[in-house]
Amino acid sequence: MTKLEDLLELDRLRRIVEKNSGRMDTPQLEKEFLEFSAYSPKRALTVRLPKLYTLREGHAKRVADALASVNTPADRIPGAIDISGCFSYDSTTEAVVFLSLQQVEADHYSSSRSCLNPLIEKIYMDGCSLIRDFSIHEALVGKVVCKRGDLDLREVGLFPNKFITGPYSLVADLDTPAKTVKKFSDLHKDLAKMKSSPKECLLNPIKVQETSSKAAELRNMLGALSRYESPESQAFKAATNSCVIRTKSNTLFYLYSLNHNRNIMVYFGDAPFKPGNEPKELLVLMGKDHQHTLPMLLELGVFDTSETILAQRIKDFTEAYENATRGSGKNLSEGYPNFEHLMEGLKNVDAYFKEVVNPEVRRKYVATIDPEILEFAVCPASNEPVVHELLPRLSWNKTLRNYSNTGKFIFLYNQADDSKRKEMLTSIASNIIFSNQQNNDVNVWLYNNHRQFCTDSGIEFCIEKQQ
Image (cartoon, rainbow, N blue to C red; front, side, top):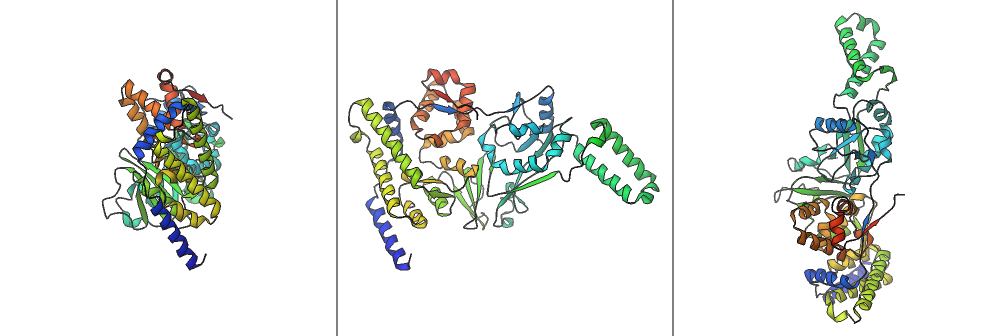
């Protein structure tokens, strides 16, 4: 487009904004959704039970010992773990634990760990001999560290000036609780040195005795040493454009926009930096401020506009409206003004998308609309799990925001009495319109721990069969 065309288009967008300046009452819209759903068919909570790796006799103790060795003790080890050794929704735990190569056939226990996929893939590909050999007697364990360059992202608040622009990395050093991998690697290096300089080593009896003692110790721990393959490295590193750090006080989504060469942090909970102490190369956005954060992420290419998704949302809303009309036997349009405003806005955006195909102009346009409408016109711009996890956390709908935050939902549910719990469940079922709004972690947790109460509260489950 020419400069003049750009100016004309921006003027047109300004007039559209002025025309549609009447904002929706978000709490009232949530209430309308709740009432509106009374006339619609019940929406079941979809449950996709994860496939896990079953622990054999003695394995639970190995997992407990492994976690204790990296200062992340667990109160109780269940009968199964996932692809990376996880078995709970305590997402602040960063350790990965490996007992067998067969673990690779398991799913993630929690979708929040999907951000570790690049590192997990690297470990299973490049560290298969390490897992195969050294997990026979002990579990392999390592703490995952998220980095930007050489800077540990957990220390950004301490060293904000060290943060530089670029993609992130996930790093883990694997070893057993008894450090047998390092001991075996050191022994292998000593033997290689002896082989290369036999006279020098044989004339040093102290060194020979030390090496012999190391070999004897390892043989008592591992058995025949000849069947072990010396690992090239215990350290594994994988590049990624997104990662998540969870603490007891906040959750930090780190994103890197390759097209804009921009690093972004979206935080939930306590602010990670004191005012004015943010790294210069890091754009810090408040997740709670979703009405501004979502348009900014759209502008930076983390999310993208989608005509296909928008059309499907309009179709789904229309079907829900027609079902509610049939169920009540009357026209509902006058009773739900905010829903009508929402539908009108979605149709206006759909008409604009059909007229304008330029993606950048579309971005500028949707950045001017109500956030309640914007949410239904965008999608993740990549297949990265972190971006998909983030989108529902930025919803205008408070119920869906809390439901999408697994840890917060479980905490609130456990603190609530039966009356409040039923209200929470009903609100969730009423506000879930689309399949991508389902939080499988919460659904599985409810199914496994509160199935009868959910059934008594009118909540149904739809069990998806594993592929």
